[in-house]
Amino acid sequence: MKITLIALFSLLLLFTGCYPSHKSMETSPTWNVYDYAISFKLKDTIEIKIVEYIPAFCNCGVLACASNCIGITPTNDTIRVICLCDTNAFTAGMKVWVVPVTYELKRGECAVAMNSLSEPTPSAIQLKKYRTTDGELFLKK
Image (tube, rainbow, N blue to C red):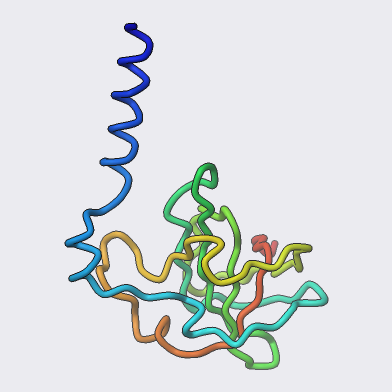
């Protein structure tokens, strides 16, 4: 009986603590990175210089989260890289390798950060359309 009550209480906390109320969802604006994406599949590892990087807002587990990196290639092409489960602390100006991945994320499959917790709205950089790919980011040494 005690275990059942603890389990029920835990489920109640999980469902009420993790999801915003319907009222706040209706009144809060939402942004979806895929509204600002022109998808392409990365074939080879490339280098980019980071313009803006927003880490995933959670470690992957029950919810899949991804970081959002906008960078400039050596050919001056600005691209967006969606990186699954990436909570690294990259900053603007860093040079990173973007490595192709075997998976392809589709709209709605994971939560992609468009703004940090301290900034309620995405920056003007985030609200532009870019060629967008999935990849893994590694600091260039």
